[in-house]
Length: 295
Length: 331
Figure 1 (tube, rainbow over the protein chains, first blue to last red):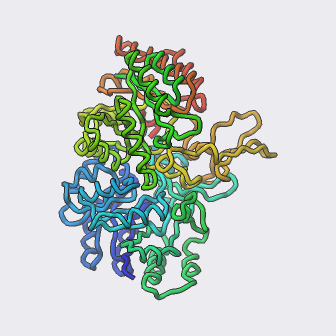
Figure 2: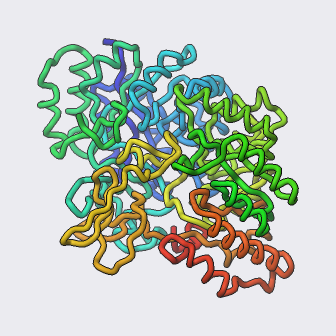
């Protein structure tokens, strides 16, 4: 089967050593595309831009397609300055997660329209292709039917990427919910989010695992899992499947998706996957349900 | 600095115009805007009547068409756009990049405002929409600090509209899928957040409880006032603590900083609340009109009067207010 696997940017605040160690391993993992960089919080600077570029170069040398990802919420002038540096790098493609990135990439520069660009119809796909997008990542709340419809009518040369595994990026805020949970101001956050390599769980008062707090971002409580849909996705010609990193098991998760893509695994793939998400999954968005539903 | 007020119905529009709104924003009753609630919004005849009423009194009417239409709803959205142009609204408020691209072709004369739902928080994003589609105004998401608003105003030549009063989205508008995660419907997909049909109230031995599509949002002690179960305003458990882990029920009120907003060149102040009734619209419009006029007359001596704040607090979510992201402590 001819779909590529992509590793989404690390959503959490990991220390520099962990990030570097992670990408040293990624080099040998069965994934074709690696998205790199900080997309959540401008205050997190575990690595400098130059250090990210080093990782990018090392991965590129091992044959990976490397894409530099960008912030979804740009507020300060310094955020734009950093975005500008990323967009004017001459080596690697950029994943735009805000229209500011599209603006800063000279028209025609190849880019990926990331999951935070709202692509809900063909007209928007046409616009992004015109601007230079060579790939679009479908917004997480669209149903499989809508994504398939748009995929079938996408402009020539535009690849479709679908979020198939990981906690879903649901919302962004100016506030930091990790800081709030510790009753400290965002200005004095002392990087509390570094204590939660997989985010901070948020439960309802009846112990329903509802969301995951990740600094200024809220994610789904449970990871999205479209393993059962992989064959369907490949059969309609979806080019890229996206998996979001977690602190444990990313290699194994990629391996299972790779094995399913290669037809080297059958019915019990879900059973092999389950230790890496013991609390369960969701796949409601794909089925046109509430996103939290699993069926 | 003009005052832009919400109208979910003709009586609300009349209340806004009569109490001093410079402009009123409305939506069609066809699910093409972010207040797609039962019993709300305008059909063509009411919209024409509203425009006539406003024009006769020197006010303008904007049409919110700020959903993200999916393929199945595309025709409905473009039909709404043509109708808006046909009945002569003073501007359409759009969020979807595709719809913006489409609008400029058949209606080059139509004034385009970029909705808060477009999540344009910075000058480069605004420049994108201005250069591609000629937007004339941007409504800023409620995530920017005052100095950031100032930087945006200084760096762009499109008019900047900011929210001055009303219920508060704590998330960047246009990038929030919390509601669709829990209920299947969100502002982007259906023009609703935490929709009423998914709400269930229960009286239990542990107190009154609110649920959204079965998910427990909050539990109230006897005598505690209960609010609408908007997802981001529930009480949840994090690290063994139960609290408003995302946001308290609270309203935005920018009255204390009107002079700064005026001085930095903000073009318009927006009031949230098309889902609210004419009485709300009348009260809020009256107070903001008086405050803006007082501020323009004497910006250096301006202070928000206690009776204004009290009036606004009475109609506020949570009966209390904040400057939200506009002041640093909130961030």
